[in-house]
Length: 267
Image 1 (cartoon, rainbow, N blue to C red):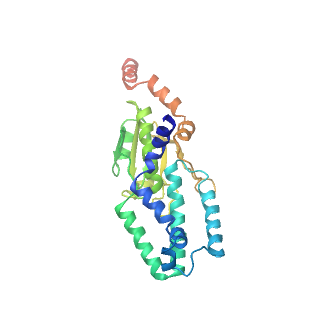
Image 2 (image 1 turned 30 degrees about the horizontal axis):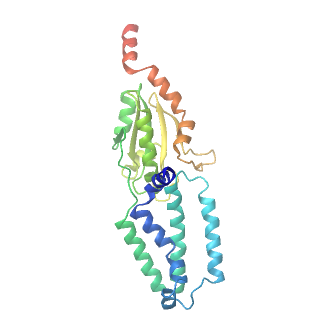
Image 3 (image 1 turned 90 degrees about the vertical axis):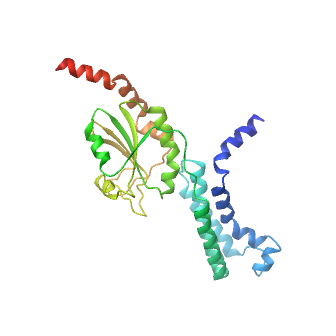
């Protein structure tokens, strides 16, 4: 019973309409093409031909390559479904253009009616608008900030929401704070921090650690060749790469009140 309960808790985040309908749409072509009597009504035969098997094999190779650094099961499923739906749409359209159009309409309706779930749990995050971020960084340089630059429409940003919220709950202090800014709404802020907020951006999300009002580290970073070095936004990786435990200890050992008293004594 314990193992079943654990399995249920693990699967619970994906047992929602968004992922269920996504999976159904992803395998719809294979189901309709192979299950009688539906296949007899829609297609000339009830089996996948050699070309279709080749395309499915190619899809499998792409999925393996794309999912090597996926952070969580939800991201993995989203990526698989995305490529599977593209292939399904192509095969529907190849069979009959009307089938392809109908499938595209179903995908559009699914996106509107069953959007990807948004994290609504506890968090200790400050949401910035426009120039307020830079003003806050300059206002009190004693505070260390961890800032996520995101876009609401970006699936990787949506997936990272819960991870960032957990980090804020685990590490927030009076002088170690977490913040977010939507660079899709404020692209000028993104430009000032060298973050592309365009539709094909590979920099969303971007996580930056600011200490003493200055950028100390960011992920993903830009290589000397000008390319974006991909990063897997797993909680454990962020804790390790940003040395969150060390940053937390330094901030905790040197709280703002103590620093204020120290400054007064020095004056």
